[in-house]
Length: 392
Ligand code: MRU
Image 1 (tube, rainbow, N blue to C red):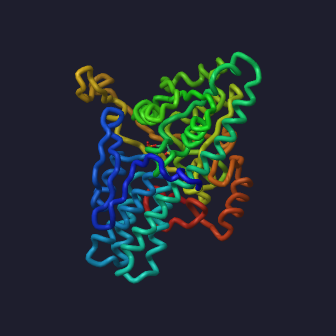
Image 2: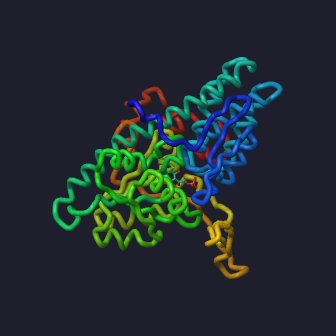
Image 3: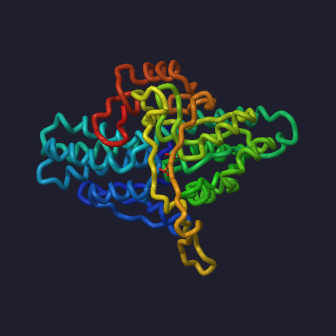
């Protein structure tokens, strides 16, 4: 990591094993920026489950701190306490594999230690996970920047040559979703800093509007040109030649390269495929689940339908209110993620470079970066932490 790459906005501040962590309460954005303390594992579990914080890498890092807090607060940091706290945290959200990956990393680090040493070691491991996430995303940014430069160079003919590079993204895979930089946004921030003229199409991302509320806020803070569009606009924009490249984040990638990400991603990939627009997925290795053969086995979170039937916003006099959108009594369904088949993915942008979304390329990558790994999760390490996220 070069100088300055770790000095980026972060949504999580560690305060210490006795005090816990502080996080940005993302439910309040973009209308209010507020930090809230989380002092024990139960508070961390609630914050993950109810999406005070969200995004695959961030929930992994927060859960790691949560496990450390559980051990620090316990009368005895014995095996039973460790297993119960890890299971409690793992059960908060099912789809993003980073959660099980981070918990397993902390668990396996402390299990061989005597109980009296476990809390401090767990906290140090959580710190390592958080710092590594920032470095990993900076590396994704460097590799992704080359893709953006290449896409800019490809626009040989006017009128596209005479306008900024147009990049479309879905959901929030920005610094709010990670410990720093973001995954899909890291190349965008690096391109902006390098002076590459670009504009970002920000999918609103119904039903929780992570694009409209969070990505637009982040890009605005960084003065990156962007326009929020309705989720349904992407296909039209691609048909009109208004999108040069799509880049999204991911919550779990299966061994064959199938990508699970926020609901609506699949439709963007289909439209990109139909229109010859490159469709990239920014994937830290902590989001790769080598134990799942394909995307069919990825557990898809079903969330409260109130996210769909109601919407919150700020009135002209500054009050934030929630209103109902659908008729009283209307039934709804709210699958929170979908799976984009590997064949629709142009490439996976990892911290180790850009790799094809297919089983052979991913196996070769794991052999190169973690030759002794096997099993599930992240860089191929086994996920012994039980929970809905550890389907295998
Ligand atoms: O339900 P969320 O907001 O946690 O979903 C987040 C996403 O789908 C992101 O795109 C994904 O986690 C990648 S975050 C770097």
